[in-house]
Amino acid sequence: MMLLALQGVGLMAEYCAQCAKQYGMSNGFINECKPNYLANVICEGCGVIQVNHKGECVSHDCDNGNHAVEWKIKK
Image (cartoon, rainbow, N blue to C red; front, side, top):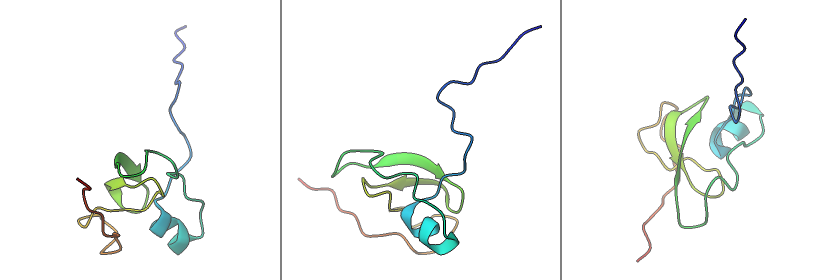
């Protein structure tokens, strides 16, 4: 019998900060990246998006509408 071990695979649903607030869940993407950087994640409410270090959705084309926060590249 072959056993499959899933390491580093989160089995819990994760939400960006805006969806977490909307659905009463915890924000699972806090500190996913350093300040002034973005991380690609899968939010249960938004789909595939980018989040900042606060876990906030910055993708204006997310599945959950227009709740993205403004984010600018710092030079």
